[in-house]
Length: 501
Image: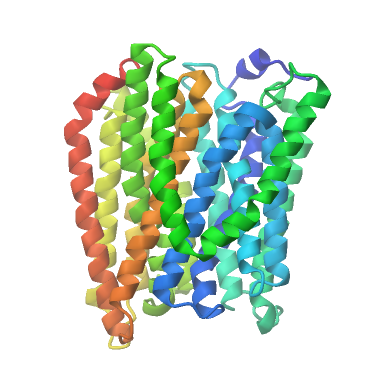
């Protein structure tokens, strides 16, 4: 069996060695994911001739499904497949999806995307859960572990986010990739790195001991196999349904009206098995979940309306270096996370030593204030535009720099808080709801982006710039309000969290 769970959690030094293996698996998977995400809207507008409004809605629906599926994937991992099998199956589906897209992106766009959606649902939530299990409860090194893991996520997002779209648009390696195959190659990269991710995982999983094995080990093999095979067949059978849902966004609207309230009701149903103190913590987790929806709705303009803004309205130099504006929009944030995540972590530790570290709720609030400032910078780019409606990529990049600090206040600690606030038995459900909140964020991001795009239809490039900029100004105001509200209610939420820091 290799290591027991006690031996793994008893590691010396700062990080368990298993964290590095999971780090690399996740890094390549995120390369694939962010590479694909950065291409979607531009591909739909330039290759499938969709209108910008429709493309934004499609984008919101696609991403919402990805995250909604993480909830379902987490549930099946918890009850049937176990984290590892789930992750492996998800990886296979993602590889299939990106291969379909690299062979024939135009004709099979929705088929390829649907494979990727289901695959990500099985892959993404479970690798984060495994990271959590490398630590004993109360191990103070857990946050540092999640921060390192988060850097892996961003390293993948940085490389994939830039390379895929830059290749597709012909601003990278155009000398040896024929023009008519650019999109095929771009989607092809996503499949190759996903294969690397999966191999990394299968070759190192022995070191994980019992972490992530099947929860049904007490059943006879034959019975367990039936459950597992049923899960595999079910996840393939749902692909046509997803194609339908993503291609007709109104179906996604209905789904989003149901799934959120349903998951909250399910949580309340589970709560009757827990003590009052556990339930108060779960309520605190819900506060974080609800606010994170708003955060991602604004933040995720990056894949939607900001992608089109980058394609139409930005120059192509940062500090005099020629770069693809879409590539910058997709990857600047990841670069800044890698550069500053450790510093922000050190700042919290420094403040903790002096007993002035803000609590998790206030950090969440600060996240929104940074977000508001960043969107205000996006708005401010309109004052630097030429008559052609193109404006400074430098200033735009600076906006992402500010937003990154908002993300660093919110995302890594959010995940860590979810694992601390939920009792072991509902961990996957709470993790799932955390990702489901992202699904709502993505979904609303599509709606917000579509509204901004709709207002600018048939406009000149300069008018378009002004409409987009004013849309970002409104988002800045909303983010500011959310941040102030969170900081104001922080004493109350802190009471609900009790002993959880």
